[in-house]
Every structure is written in structure tokens, then in C-alpha cells.
Amino acid sequence: MNRFQNIFNAQKANQFTVGNATYKERIKKLNALKQAIEVDFKDQIREALYADFKKPFLETDLTEIYPILGEIKYVKSELKGWMKHQKVTTPMALLGASSWYIHEPKGVCLIISPWNFPLNLTFGPLVSAIAAGNTVILKPSELTPNIAQVMSDIITKLFSENEIALVQGEVEVSTALLELPFNHIFFTGSPQVGKVVMKAAAKHLTSVTLELGGKSPTIIDKSANLKAAATRIAWGKFVNNGQTCIAPDYVLIHEDVKDEFIRVFKVVIESYFGNDASTSNAYARIVNDRHFKRLQNHIENAKTHNAKIELGGDVQELDNFIAPTIISNLPEDASLLQEEIFGPILPIKTYTNMQEAIDYINSKEKPLALYVYSKNKKQTQFVIDNTRAGSTCINTNVLQYSNHYLPFGGSNNSGIGKAHGIFGFQEFSNMRSVLKQHTKGSIEFLFPPYTNLKQKLVDFTLKWF
Ligand code: NAD
Image (cartoon, rainbow, N blue to C red; front, side, top):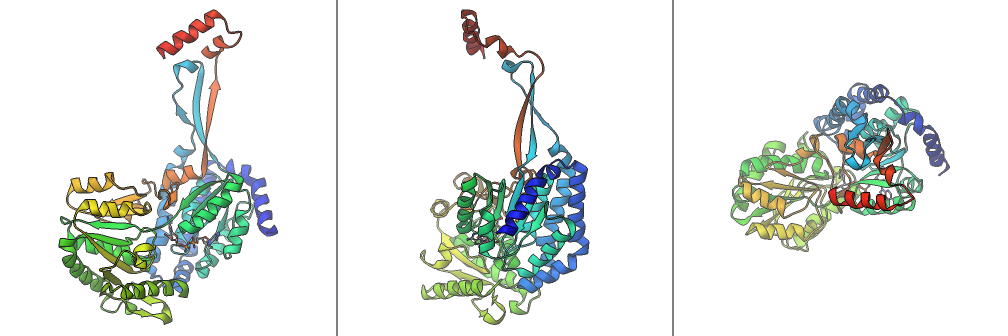
């Protein structure tokens, strides 16, 4: 605990030096991070993620390295504007004053990240935190130790501990860190742990960003282009071996097109991974034994419920391999329909009319993402109008994450607050209002003593403003 307290104290003492860094100084830090990820540590990053869960190099480039480089590039292009005084209108009643607000740094921040996109979800928020002028303690997941070590090496090389520090460890480390009175906590992980974080933050009235998970539904209506839907869903579901917070968790499909969709989906999966995905170099593995067993239990549970394994279902304990799996005819109490899946298993559930699909979604927690495949604009709008979700893609999935102009995050059970671009920058900033009085203000005519004349002026003002 003492070690964390010492780092915290050192960062607190240094927060104004870091916070008052100019635009150019902040850009220099972002450039250093870019150079480390793009060049100096690129090979170590790829190898570490392969060692952690056999993540293919191309997937590492696409889903870990590229998003951070893209975020840095975008932030660099906008930061000058974000750091400026943001002028706002001053109402007539405050004649003689002018007003603006500034994005001041929150101060000393904690970023706790998960294992599923460990680099992206640790350094992504860090980019926002640096841009906003904060000091940061990072706590990556213990489940991907190889990449955690590479990230630690990067941080140690680039920053002093009183500005950015990375500490490794299990739950006890998080618990100890959460005792400290941080100015902001940015947590990415499960809703269960999100509640622990929010409770700890409440003790110090620390603000939080919670990037959480849950079950993200995918609706496919009768009019949808089934081939396009299958092509995109198969990628969105099986990239990172299904261990993606915004992966389509399950499909809700109109009963008339279910059989055809499954037929096309099987063809697509074979074209991606061959007929034995365990030999494919495009297919990662489950992160550890515990998660492997959890997913194996889901498949066993589905079988005991007489569900239909449409594809896959095979597992290899030796290297935590679970084949791309499609399961239909699941009863509502099957575990696959109750818990976030977070693996390469796709349940397919049918509906007969859209209202039924919507009622089903609304009977659950608000999802992080909700996807709709349809050619019918009215139907798509009907889904958006009658559901709530952190984000929606129409006729695709997962790509909303890659647009820095869009806020990324959930709602209630799937999250609080937003990440990426200006939204991430604001999450790590306090919007501080400033009002400057230039001349004698009109309000001063109303200061005490309260005379009849002043009362008449107030009556007049209330009537006309
Ligand atoms: P997790 O909640 O188990 O762990 C996340 C982090 O919290 C890790 O660093 C872990 O060490 C720490 N932690 C675990 N238990 C803790 C406790 N009791 N107190 C304090 N800290 C604790 O999540 P995970 O298994 O690493 O990741 C999977 C979850 O994260 C899924 O639910 C997924 O949907 C979600 N997720 C969300 C996003 C998003 O952007 N919204 C992104 C990725 C993952």
C-alpha cells in the first residue's frame, strides 16, 4: 500500500506541472507513445499478445495498435482547439461581463483495464488522459501478463513515476489502489467489478468512467441481405475469438430467414477459418483455463437443454480452443441466454414480429451495442426508437468503435461516461466556467438597500426577460 500511496503523493505534488504543460509539450508525449507502439516495441507487442492468447499478428495490428495510433493522430489534430478557452454567450442581464469555460485537467487519475484488448484499452484512455493534462496510474489486467510487462517497459522508458506509472497485480492491487482519493477513475471491465469500482469511488466522491459489458443483441429482419450480414457478423463475433465487449452476443432473427442465414453463415465461417479452425492462423484462443471451462459449461448446458448445435461445439482443453459455434433452439433459461458469452459461441433465437424482438431486448439490461440488419429504413428506425443502447450499427457491427468522432460507451449496466476523441478528453477534464466582469454590471444597480425604484426595476425585468 505504501508504494501506491507514495506514487499517488508524488503525482499529486506534480499535477500542476503536468497539467500546465503546453499544447506542444502534450503533443511531444503523445509522439513518444506513438513511436514506442508503432516502432520501438511493435514486435514485442505482437509477440506478447501471441503468447497471451495466440492473438494473430494481423489482429494485433488491426485491433490493438491501429486504434491507438488512430486516436493519437486524431487527438493531435484537434488538441489545440480543445485546449483553447471555449467562449460562450453572456446574457443581457449580465451586461458588462464576458464568459468562457476551460477544460482543466481532473488531476491524478487511475485507469484500470481488462485483458481482452489489453494494449488498446490501457493506452487508449491514456491518450485522452495525457491530452487532458493528467497524471495517471495504470493497472492492466493480470490475465495477460506478457503484454502487461511490455506496457510496463514502455511506460518506464517514457515517463517518470510522478507523471505516469504502471502497476501490475491481481485484485488486491486494484483494491489497494481504489482506497486512494483519485480525481478520476477510468475503468474498463465487467459490470460486476464496475459496481465495486463505483462504490470505492463514492467514498471520495471521485468521478468515474465505467466502460462495461453485457449482452449485445443483433437483429436480422426478413429484408436483410443475409450474405452481407453473415460476412460481417462472422468477423465481429470471431475476431479476438469472441472476447470483445461489442461483439454480437446473440442473433435475433425473423423465423422465415433463419435456416437460410445459418446455411450462409456456415459457408462464411469455412471460408474464414477452413473446416478446422484449430489449424487456422486467423483464429485466437480463449485467454485462460477458467474462461475456457466457463465456455465449455455453456455448451454442455445448451446440450442438456436439447438445443441444436448447428455448427462447431468442439473444444480442445490443451490450448483453450473452442471451435466457431452456432447454437439454436435454446430455451430462455439456458446459460447462454442469461450471461454475457465473451467467446466464439453464437446463439440464434427467432422472432415472428419486430415488437417481440424489441420486448425481448427491453426485458434485459441496456446493451453496450445493438445491431440491426435490414433494408427497411422504417423498421430500423422503429428498433432505434423503441430500445436503448450505448451504440448501434445498421447493417454492420463493431466498426462504431473505430470512428473517433463518435462517443463510445454504454448506458447504465453497460457503462457510464464516454471514450474516444473529444469525449475521452472531456472525461478526463473538468469543464471550469469563468465569468469576467469588465465594467460596472447592470445587476449592481439592484444591490441593497432595496428601494421601491429597485423593486420596480425587478418587476420590469421579470416581465420583459
Ligand atoms: P474484469 O471486470 O474481471 O476485470 C477488469 C479489471 O478489473 C482487471 O484489471 C482486474 O484485475 C480488475 N479487477 C477484477 N476484479 C476486481 C475487484 N474485485 N476489484 C477491483 N478490481 C478488480 O473484466 P475482464 O474479465 O478483464 O474483461 C471482460 C469484461 O470487460 C466483459 O464484461 C467485457 O464486456 C468488458 N469490457 C468492456 C469494454 C468496453 O469498452 N465497454 C471493453 C472490453 C471489455
